[in-house]
Length: 147
Image (spheres, rainbow, N blue to C red):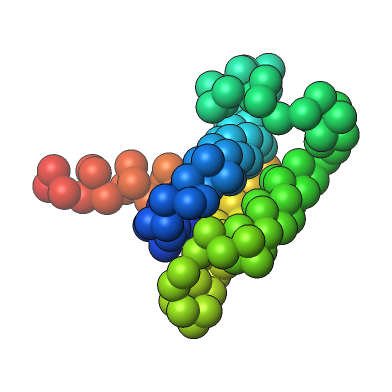
């Protein structure tokens, strides 16, 4: 989300590009919404939950049908977002110096890395012997604290 916020903040104020700029900003917001919902679905305990999206009907059907069955949806959407960022830079929608804009790409990649870490926590179960040991130590501590 920081990445999207940065790209919106870095957008040009040139009035001659306002229509194309608005379309580009709406596209990256929709793609980020899809990526966020996919990430929540990936780490959520609710397997068949529908997460709200920002106007998915505005994205072409072929793209939606392509990404829907994929296992690596977040990575595909991240690539689409990066391509949209580059397109926005090339079309002059971003008038901020490149080193500052690089931060938006960095935020996006850090978010996907954090998603990978969250997915590990959501899928790898805590070992039962450790859980039993912790429970037993807590009981002993509780008894010891009362004395």
